[in-house]
Image 1 (cartoon, protein in one colour):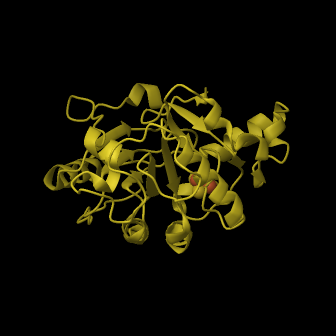
Image 2 (tube, protein in one colour):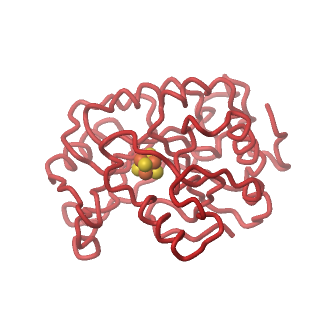
Length: 268
Ligand code: SF4
């Protein structure tokens, strides 16, 4: 089993890499940094360097040993497209995700430029969901990079939402998550920004997931929006067949439109 997660939109976490560096305003109160320092103080072996980048060879193959199907957030304690992660290591992680087709992997990055740079060399598969974080209007170019990538299922994590995001281009986007910042120093999120994104998703037919209002009292603030929770997910057909959902065969020749019975080969 992967490490069970309390994050509302996933099931467990897998961290073959830990440690990161701040890249944009969304990183200011980074949860992973706070957690890494806590784990370092507790003597956790994967965090002896605290929040400095560390590659964990022993963790790369773990999902192949987890027989029960899980939804796995990859690198919740880092960013998989960090420059310091060698391409070869990244390829090994993607190869494991492709082989372990009984799991769903959720990869999230703020380094969308490196995602795009390496995309054509990565062994994409329908069970690898790729997302970018967009915290305010200065980072919507990450959506364009994601759209151009070879990922079969593409999603946005708009968390922490730090400003209005009107007129998002949601073409080719399969799922949108919105959330406010939580913890010490949490910056406020205006409900009008959230409702506007929810309406844009509705208008474009994109599933919308509202994670939380956040704030310093996260539990109290809850996750209700207009009297209900919003836990929409990409449709089953899209989840199982990715970009092949409406086509006879994968245009990128990355995977079969039918769910494979045996583990996929390591590379396409
Ligand atoms: S990219 Fe993510 S993990 Fe890295 S510093 Fe920013 S918020 Fe933290």
